[in-house]
Image (cartoon, rainbow, N blue to C red; front, side, top):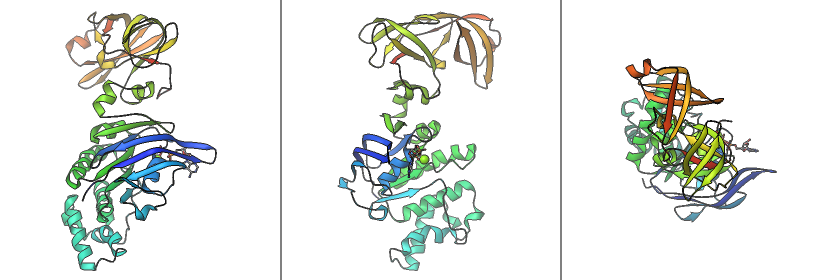
Length: 358
Ligand SMILES: Nc1ncnc2c1ncn2[C@@H]1O[C@H](COP(=O)(O)OP(=O)(O)O)[C@@H](O)[C@H]1O
Ligand SMILES: [Mg+2]
């Protein structure tokens, strides 16, 4: 099977007066594992259904393999869609489920079952063809649904939160399964999820979406280390957020006057002297002691053990700073009053904007 690239050219989608997807340009490479990550209601499913042909865009074009999909329905596109609700047929065997779509294509029964067997081998369910879906675990049923979707040889597989019905352990296991299947098959996967762990673990690249708009498209490391907007900074991973006023501004560095004093950070967007801005620092980039340029005296309010690491809740001037440090003897013997510090490189300064969590 061969993957195809997917291109959105100024695609917008409206339902009546409300805009579900703002004008969007996006290029997804052939053979890429691409995720669209965002909170519930941000427009992920709408975007995916537009790629699959169940929804026509209000404006703009969808191109798959360079071909304009305008006017083409789901069955005329080289795509297959997997929903959260897998909708396997309970009275058919696993092999019959996988072969189901091939009958409509006029393939003979013997060929259908042979093809089903190949696909079951591909998803590591070779011995399960004669079983019923109800005999399988949740993760195995998930793989049957993938095999069934692959039976029609799509160039692009679209997955709409397919793991969200599974329990946590299975979900984590299925991340590596899905990634391995994608590598084996080699086609383009477009995976949508509200779970950042899933998106970051599996994807070549991730688009972070909020309120119908793509905020940033990048690989996982870039999203985490160099978020482009306050929304991405706070949606992906944990973040301490300080509000302040810009008191000095050079090319790439700014100082803010915040409730905890003057802090310096790297400029991540258009900010102006004398105006409000946001400073963000990750809990694991704050250190105990005075090592960094930005030093803050705090009172230790709580200590939450997380096994290998410890989250310290520290209070300063009505603010709470969360600090993540490795667990160890020194953390157990911390005084109530301490100094925290962090480097300028690790503190990001954004213009005011929408945050992911309030
Ligand atoms: N068929 C529809 N008619 C009207 N509004 C819709 C329709 N489908 C989705 N919406 C709206 O579009 C927005 C995005 O929905 P959706 O794409 O399902 O988000 P997500 O998948 O990210 O949770 C929501 O506000 C939703 O209510
Ligand atoms: Mg959805």
